[in-house]
Length: 231
Image 1 (tube, rainbow, N blue to C red):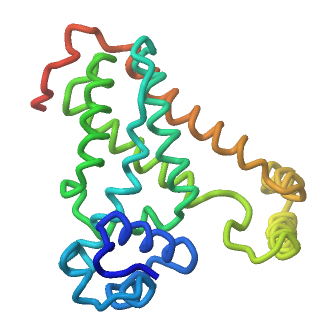
Image 2 (spheres, one colour):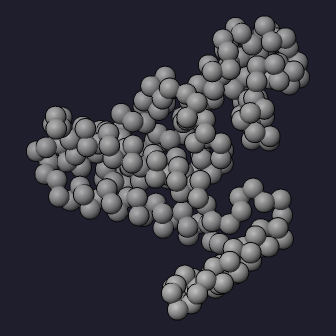
Image 3 (cartoon, one colour):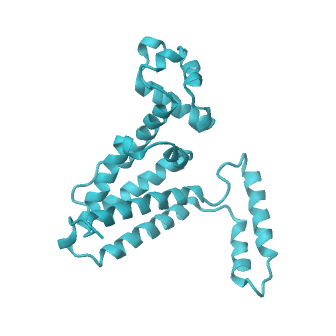
């Protein structure tokens, strides 16, 4: 256990992250963290004033991974893709992140602001106005969250056997639909027999998100790149 004199904000955040990953975000409280770290709750107040500030620190820490080092010669879309891919990767590892985002004010997160500013710059290079770029970055954020939230299969299943049984039940439910009314759905049900290829699922989803941005960017002209949309 940690001693109070060696306690730092980083060690506190890392312990909160460990606890949230092992149990749930709801288990992360100042009192529980103090117990885990072997200190009094008062010792934590030197670093975080309350649970709300703790969640801000936790969200900001996780978002540090979303703005990686770029190849300076890479085109804007390649760099933006790396950011979205990194965001998806972090959320897959810490599945409570979408819920955590809803609990904090995003403008209080330095790393969220850094990622947003970087995305706005990349989208400006693509010819989007700043207002359009902000809308696109928001769309990408929510699209990434939707991909993770709707991951096929059973992310929280206790075992492969339970996951297979749940897939079987879903398949049977679809196969019971009238084939003359819903032939494609019934045909699709057969594909649910096998365990989903998650890497293919995320690669396809990322391609869909980025292709929409790239197709729209192709209609823009460089001269409008830094204009602010006042519509």
